[in-house]
Length: 448
Image (cartoon, rainbow, N blue to C red; front, side, top):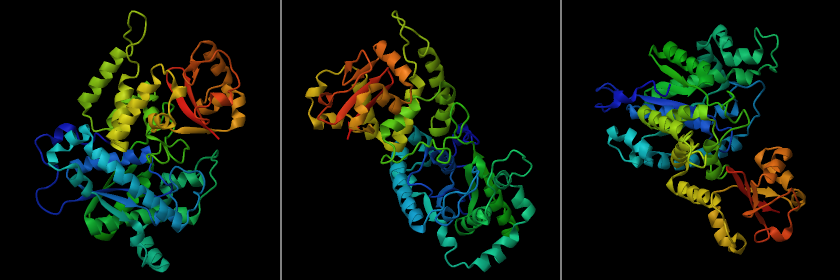
């Protein structure tokens, strides 16, 4: 989907829009079901930004109303209902996330090059985005009006044929583990259909974008607009982000990569992409950045050379070349240049021998690790290093003990030779432990 408009089509053209008439809009909807946007939301936003590059006015619709109902797509059971206060608070968090994200993203070098044909500053590009809350569509509407005026445009056969409904009802699947569906969630697609119609009427919105699990909801809006106005509207979906095993990355899957630095540190965000499997790096470079396809292909080509080229000692030149470019680019887009500089400093710090760290001031120590999540552990945990490391890094105690014997484990920059108790006297400033496990795993623990 992200390549549905070739990069070449923008060359020599200001936009792909008609030269006369009002500028059409495209939109994505985001339900405020959490206090932070996640990487799946960013993928949908990227598709919207591609439409912006083609001249569409982008709209981000917050689900102040639909967030109270719950989207059944991709769920086997009812979503936990949120209070109006929780939904409002989450929207406020989303607005804060987007304020930071848009400022950083439009300032990133690949993004600026991609949007250069529009001849707008990063600030102007960000101000082009319209924010709407769908609660305003329903505040003055009664239940009778909704059922009579909107419900009459939807046929039951069509509604029941949607995957989001069939999967929940277990239609045709004897092995279904679904708990069924409430009328509340069944009505969700009517609300999303009406949302599209309202945006179409108010803002000339002709295109809706969303994840591949949203097609049924998008189709409801297209059909509603056609039935009520006779106009044509369109929709497109982007494939959901998955890990190397094909599992969905998202909040509902329990493995979401959150964008808010208050929830997920920029360093952890960066490390996620550094540790990405090789077979998905190219896809992520194309989907989550504005690099040209040619540039991505060149990066992958260089990566394949560097990942296998060895020096005289048998060391690989750079097995994470493409991963580093991906991680740096996306981190700059989300968290900004300054956050990336802090991460670079921390990485340099982690990947060299550290001397006299126990003599560092508390201020110097905390400043060096400002972008790193501090893992909370208790004094009782100090009885076994392998227990601490296993909980933090997700490796078995056997694996950790083997790594200790191989000389691959350090506590406060000193190699340990056996799994052992950590003394209170070893704590930096009475509360920190610096752990390095192999080449890639490292963290700062705070003891409470």
